[in-house]
Image 1: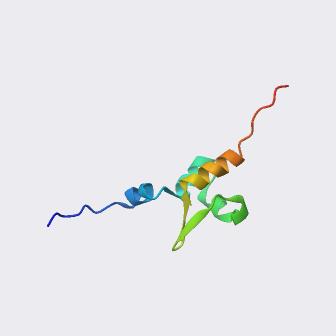
Image 2: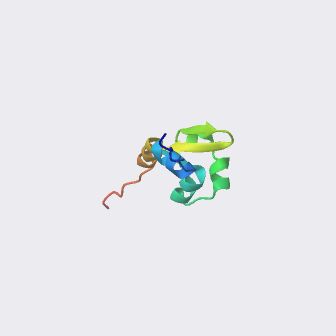
Image 3: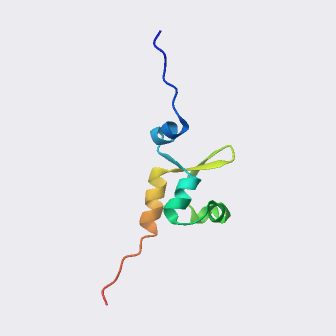
Length: 74
């Protein structure tokens, strides 16, 4: 029998395209506490895993695209 390699939590998150809230908070330049206090309507879609919120990479990209401000020429 070939032994199976145990996947780390990080490898599983990467495999399913998920980002923990600590990484999203860092990306947005806010604290995890601020992220937790935001209303669900002002967050990318997420998956609940116990007490944790895991954000889908596609949802984070869509959120960033929707909140991108383009400079207008003066």
